[in-house]
Length: 126
Image 1: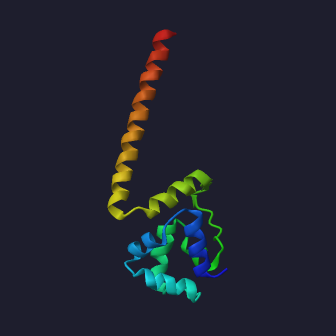
Image 2 (image 1 turned 60 degrees about the vertical axis):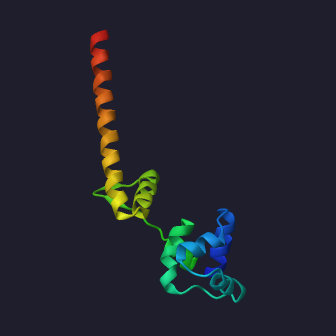
Image 3 (image 1 turned 45 degrees about the vertical axis):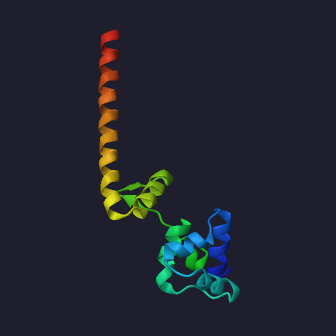
């Protein structure tokens, strides 16, 4: 399967509109029609934005294969959930990354406060 085929099959699978991709890339719909009818791959300058729009990795878009990535921190290998969270974080615009970190810190603080309250309640009832 070629790049162009992966683009159009992913659009179909994810119920996304080619017109929305054109708008996202700031191209005419005729440009995309040419890619499809001539089985011509889009220029390299569009590949990263296409992968972002489709929610697929650039590696998969270009090759049809996912790279095996095992991320680790120190001696701790990241879980699938941790890898998923990191992948989502990396897709955020820079400004949103800072907001997300702030929200997570606030959430963590609320969880810790809640746990302190529960621990105090246990001590009182014992």
